[in-house]
Amino acid sequence: MSGSLAPVHDPSRARLAVLEQQVAERERVLAAFKTGLQALQARYLAEVGALYAELHALDAAIAETETRLGLRAPSEDADDEPEAPPPDAAGCTSRSASSVDLKRIFHHVAKAIHPDRARDDAARYRRHSLMAEANRAYAERDEDRLRLILHAWERSPDAVVGDDPKAQALRLRRRAAELEDHLVRIEAEFADLRRSAIGRLQHRIDETRTQGWDLFAEMVREVKREVARAKARLASLRR
Image (cartoon, rainbow, N blue to C red):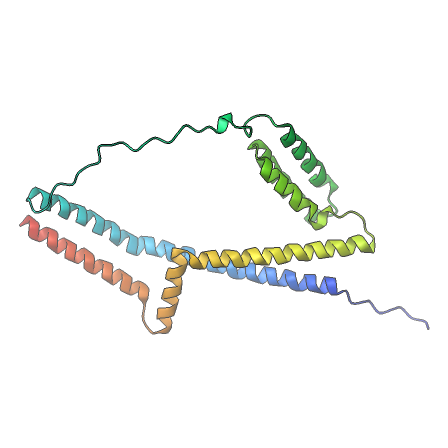
């Protein structure tokens, strides 16, 4: 029977394409989420934070005035200086000394990930990034980080040599594993951001918005009321 064979569907490549799309989408959503939290934090500092700074200054003035009028006992200042931390002994550790293992691992990493051995531009960029990280670890005498870089490299798709079908399949599997790990890290970062103070505030603001009221505006009004009460208290003490 003549004619060319139809291309065989490669489930590994199909899975890889799906993972790459998922990673790109989740990175986009994560970046937007971070931008929103940064905007909320800036707004909080500019509006609520400024009011709290004013309130703090008023509270200090009230305390000083009440003390002067005998309405409050003088505060006792701590006479003891905080205990100084012990001298940094890092310079006496083996990490600061020249390490044969450190040099051996660095040379192994440098040989394995040298950019000149890249298969294409994308791989060359990844090798350059890893080499820069390895150089920083070596400069800081961080043997553990060098070992982690080497371990990560040995599991990476770029470490697979050869163009035969077995090598190509292994590269695809390793790339898929990298993307799956990256998705896990993205979701972990989402969870950390949601648990942060600014993340919890954003969640509460979103919840109250669905109920028809503005939590942030109410927070501003409440601190303004506290500032007004503090100003009134200070004015009455100064009469």
